[in-house]
Image (tube, rainbow, N blue to C red):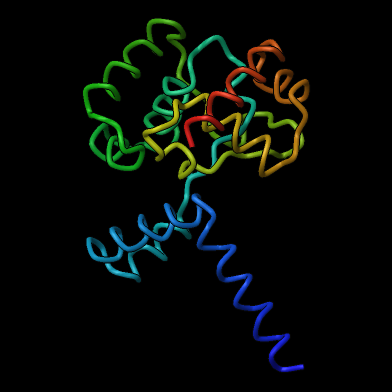
Length: 174
């Protein structure tokens, strides 16, 4: 009985290590823990910013919405946003400027923003530079919330064929 139990737990460990996402996550954790320390990582995870899904249904692009939300509502500066998203500071500044050009009114506070089904998006999913912001968002909604392409399309105000294409492109990249 003990050998059977031991073999199943060994198989589970092997399964985890064969998963690319787990390996990437462990590598990222190792890098962050040497840079910041374990306690800082725990604090960062506790204070993870959640973005309401309703913000992404506007005509403004994903990165523009995220940057605008972090500047207007959360009062982050460009350098902090750049570090959190893992993007160049020039990209962040350009995204903010484009979002102002498209929609000059400031974003409301999170309590004033209507969120369908209380779905919020953790900011940490956008850290992966291999995926575009939209790819990260669609992949998260599809895998974490088990939403259909049509439901994601309604939430994001996009065509469901676009969502399918974006999701498949994201899966190929990873």
